Image (cartoon, rainbow, N blue to C red; front, side, top):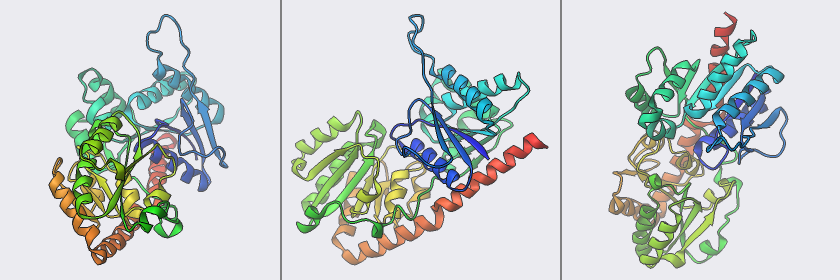
Length: 379
């Protein structure tokens, strides 16, 4: 198959999943064309059967805000026409699925067609799409897609509740991990100094937006730090980083908190972690939690959104109400202080991640979806 993929290329779960999906599809023999405004951050410079098409937005004095959605539609039309694509897979309803619909209408004027598959990742539904001014166009873009998927059952139900989606169905296809990459045994510890000092590594990875509640990460760690010798490793960047740094100084743990900034390859880091914290206010899925589990890192997280579909409470990690810093700290201290319990939980986490979220199984689900969708053209 010849597949076009459009995603946000910057840091975040949707871009990571879209990129890894494209790479996996190319490895299976498909031709994949990424269409976006810059090269996705997890995409290597060259891979067989993988192509990147940059969307350039012209700036005119007339436009206060350059129309990216229109520039994207034009580029989609161009790539489909010139490379005979069969499917446009859009990650996020707006503006990507909206642009794909415009491109498809332009193609139909010339007697060609293209199928549009839209994957909902969360923010496009829970925040952007429910903004009153975007509600109608989001609903329209979903309903005009030939197939729609959501990354969790929670997000599927939220989509149906918020938009109704008459005449369309939403299929759940989970995010996934490469079991060979996210394997604790495949990497040497990146923190030998911490291990040599007899301390445990607590980790958090995110884009540091308000929804991630990064100050709660620091607050949980401060309680853990008081009982268990440990270091907090914060990976990522964003608007709440300054608040997290200030919280660490306020609580007197800043000397044992390391802010590493944005790092593309997180698997080696996770392989050196003992515990992962994700106290988010909401997560449509929780890709970073899944990647941690696959590396055998127990997760302490919020019982919110799609996280209960990823973390098995009491088996691979622990779930607590949003904002329950004390409860999260208690679970963290219990597992870090009991080596045998940590080993059992770590083994269960890695095994469960592989059993339910293996890349090969999930990519096969997308291939089957593409095949069913293309059959609608050829019928």
